[in-house]
Length: 244
Image 1 (tube, rainbow, N blue to C red):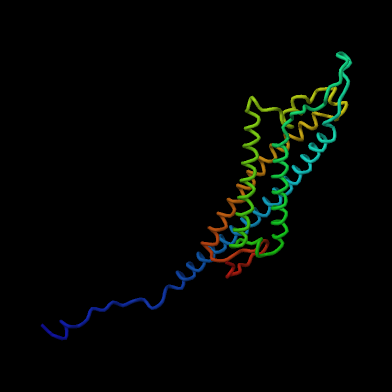
Image 2 (cartoon, rainbow, N blue to C red):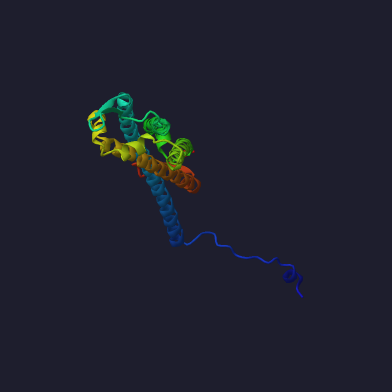
């Protein structure tokens, strides 16, 4: 055997360059993935901002409606009306009316309104509005606090309602006596007060759902950041890097 042949190393020819068509196709695929990620980031940012504005508007209306109902009660709670058939004076409101659930609901709505309002104003700053760490963390903090408040208040409300030994709260009393003409003469439309209380209750449930949706956009935002490693501005097609 020829030694030069026996000891000749095995070599393999490697391609020095890719096919131009293959490189162009890979570049197009990469660009498409980046554009899809950027589009997803913008959608998440817009959705988060819309949810925050809706949450702020809804909690603000709950504060206004509840404040009106509470003011009606405190301004008329000591008033009486004459019952002609019995020739006696009747109090418009029971002396043992439980106001704590309503006041807690009002406090939770005021707190949520303040937090959402601050975050709405902060969203004017690009660093908060965009999908980045600061925006995700701030939304997580606000949404978590709001959800905890609503769960605690609504759970307490339900405990009071189902407790047979508990007295009426403002919601149950106004809805139970919404057609009482004697009360209407002093306090005004009890049916309207009942609707206001029901609006506040279901509005609180709706705000809780919105805050859960806000947390979903946080998860979405983290996924976009992990995939892209950048942040996306609302309303712009270009992508800025280094937004973490």
